[in-house]
Image 1 (cartoon, one colour):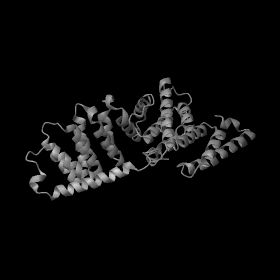
Image 2 (spheres, rainbow, N blue to C red):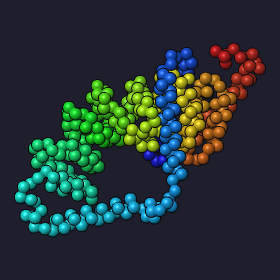
Image 3 (cartoon, helix red, strand yellow):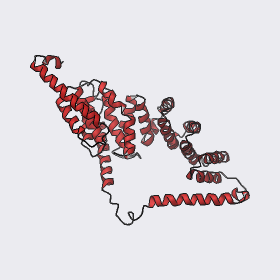
Image 4 (cartoon, rainbow, N blue to C red):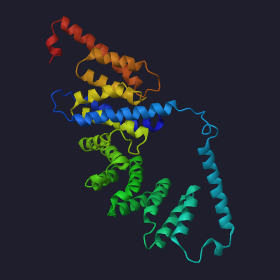
Length: 356
């Protein structure tokens, strides 16, 4: 299971424990429309196809398999930047600064320092670039780059200031990249008050809550327990005819997990079971096992101990890397014990007690 997906899964593992305490409501009104159910399955098929295509890619095709061009290029670019900076700093001051101090020159200096992780110096040059850019010609470039450097430096004050400027922009759609960076920074730090404030600020702007920003808004809302609002955003993502919307495979898999999880928490276990069935039959490692585990929980809560025990036993026999393997093993034993007690109760005339 990919590391990024495992991190996302662990972040929402609390849903599993909530599920155990939620009664299975078979008579609840349908939460999903037919189009939303179809959208979920199309999104699932799209991600399966993507994963399968990636797994089947040959690493020996010429010329792309000949050299690791990505790593090679990165190492060369870092060396080149270091050489350029060394050369630049060795020149007389007069040659370092043009006679007309332009914002582009300051931006270039900021980028050079950012590339070699001299983040404090980079941020100082970005500030200088913003002061020089009185006409706002470089505002769209400066915003995301300054936010990126601030996040990398762990500078919460600069992140907050950058986010405040982005949210004040009338053209909010053009500031999505900055807001996403700030959102990820806030969530990573566990800053619940800032997460709530940002979610509230974005709620009236549904037109920008799609793609990556829609994902992080939904993630934050689910983290904070705002299930219905999160589910609406997640269903909007899966309504895009299977398009990835710029999301990573791990993020797309999280969406597929979160939708049925939230359905269970909000009392729609029957609909969740249907989606878990589709996800559990997929080739998505981690997500598929999780779906089968949750489907077994639903069976257990509904008193279908034999079905639950069989599913848990199969999961218990999975590879050790399955995060919930120990839980599945314990639930397998508990399901068998519950089925045994029910059968003994029936033999002793206590069937009515277990059928309530």
